[in-house]
Image (tube, rainbow, N blue to C red; front, side):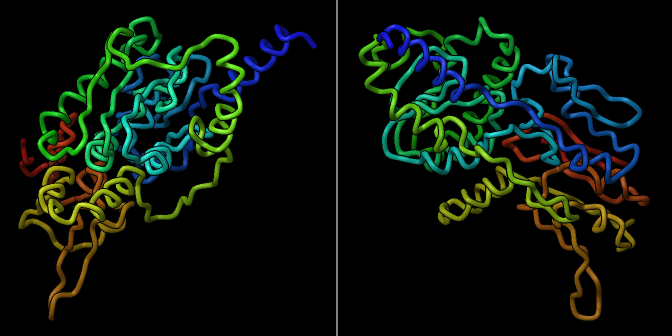
Length: 335
């Protein structure tokens, strides 16, 4: 077999291993299944390719329109969307290190040993940026140099706005420097892509692709669909708080929602039964019952707000997330 044919075959194999994962919708996890008529439209309104349809209160995915930008994965409060063969939390956990990182998408032509690949930057959430800023010990560069030519360029624009917002809110806490790379000239020197270099580095590339650098969750595991779930963003936040004892209180204030319950609350169990994260519970305090609220578990989805007949609950999203406000009856906390 000639060297040229071998090169083509190996290139094809590598591209398949590095192929971007696909969006998967688990309809049972959609919060509309918990409350009929629930007004949540985060995924539908955030989808820039019109790949999500809202039909009679049910969200459906139109695969041929989907560009796998990951916006729905980042926006859904119920973790109903995910990527097959990809887990963002796992990727970040496995690559916390002392050296600098370049974060690119699967479609990028840039190659570097210190590179992490995402399906798209649209999958990034505020907590993931916070994780990188606090846990990573080297600079983190987001490679957006080819986003203007991509079908997901609007999602990249939205990510830049999110990035700037998180920087304003939390950069004073960061240990690493997070920057956006908009042109190829700003990128650190990458790997030489000539044939000899490509063949020499192929072994490590394939191993990384198989073991998880490019697709860390190669076998999709069935996720629990019980009444109480710890959302992926909550899992990431809990990991952050575990390692940040000194600034834990400040992080809780910055990263978690805040709820207010008015005097019209009758301590009925409706909100606690509706809450799918266990953030709301009725507990005994001496001879009395109280409604307890764990803000580290709350994701500000608004189920309790809409389900409360007395309109006694209001929620403010955390400062790290400022995309929407939730209200029903009683005044909302505004930022």
